[in-house]
Image 1 (tube, rainbow over the protein chains, first blue to last red):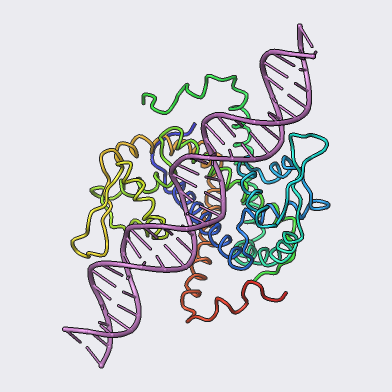
Image 2 (cartoon, rainbow over the protein chains, first blue to last red):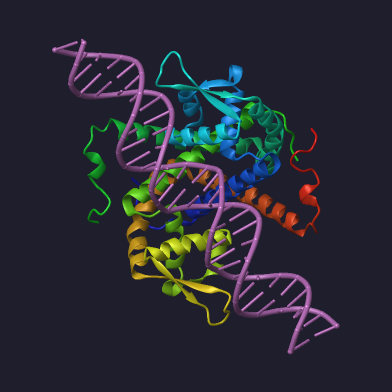
Length: 173
Length: 173
DNA sequence: GGAACTTGGATGACCCGTCAACTACTCTGG
DNA sequence: CCAGAGTAGTTGACGGGTCATCCAAGTTCC
């Protein structure tokens, strides 16, 4: 699984660089979104997903898949956004367990106003700085890592049980 | 500053890929760190920085620079970690405003136990999946973006004032 | 020396996200 | 039909992070 010796120069450069870029970029985008539109990144993603869906309606489950979020995260987020009048929850006649989230006017206006600015910022602070080759390289890296993580998660889920403790926390070393 | 039209396929692929990788990787690393060592990523970074410093002591300010954190963030984090007995704050005789953060035994043990496992995970879930060329490409991308963000921030700080509202939140579109 | 400014840090309020229950509905096999 | 298993979502507690504000100690300049 990779050894635990300290990182080599090449690894270190890539990792610290990536890490710093990642947090700086995230902070920057979140700030401008909040400042310019009064939306958090989480708000934006939810609104964007809803807005891209016909009728601005989406089952909670589909929304969760689209965003790749945990269910409690979505639940909290939707509650907060509903309190602000950006969207609302409706029961789903087809399956009483699930619910449908739907965009309200206020939410639609918010996303339609925020999207161009956000996209422009994303380009200015990130996409436009990179060559097409770099964009492709980044996409490939991401896909490689995501494929690995997904495969890994699958294995973790398949494992009947027991395993979680096999080489657990305070194990000998 | 980059326009606000929707993302092109190449941009979209790079951006969504990057974004998903970024959050998935972060989640994964944080989870295993928490599970295996009872440390959050923030804990880890603080302890690691302190541990890399001679005597396990660092002025708050230096620690903040090393981590690239906001001052209130470090303040909260240090308080929480002090409550858990991982480190402690001491006054700095040279400048009564500032403080020195120093690693306690409990903290030293924690980081020494966590580091190899964390590094191994980082390799297994990220570094080892990429070719040397990809590592270099990622480093270059990161450095490009970071340089841009840093330059940008500088400009923002230099601007006498006024600007923050120039093309403000609810501006016409 | 003292007013004005700067700097290092602490604090409280508030949002975000995770985890661990818990509820309520649906499905499946006897 | 009913017991159990699985699924969708909610909730509360808690750690994490940001922002605005405050405070105390230094610095500058007259």
